[in-house]
Length: 123
View 1 (cartoon, helix red, strand yellow):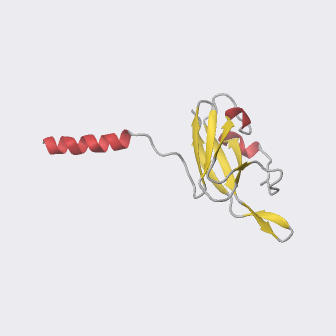
View 2 (cartoon, helix red, strand yellow):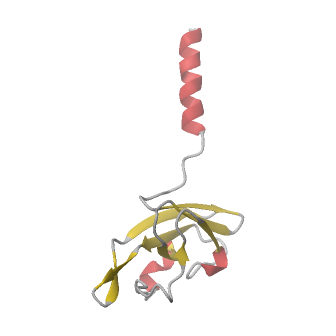
């Protein structure tokens, strides 16, 4: 009986612990104190666009492909984004979507490697 209670306690402890922050192969995100923190885990700059999830269908945006004009999260660094900088954010917004990509040279211009997304719960 004691062994069963110990196992039950261990399972409940794991189940009730906080989940990990959302992440992809190159970026993780954490929201706290009206700030979205993006962490680049790659060796290259990562570019991003963050928006209120509920407003995405109303937004007209394009992937930024000019490294001189796009805002990066530098390699192995973090970048704080105030909630007010999240596209279409309003007080009480529930989740943000963070689209992110790497810019790659292609011919005389640029392209992106792959469009990734994270959904982050705003606290």
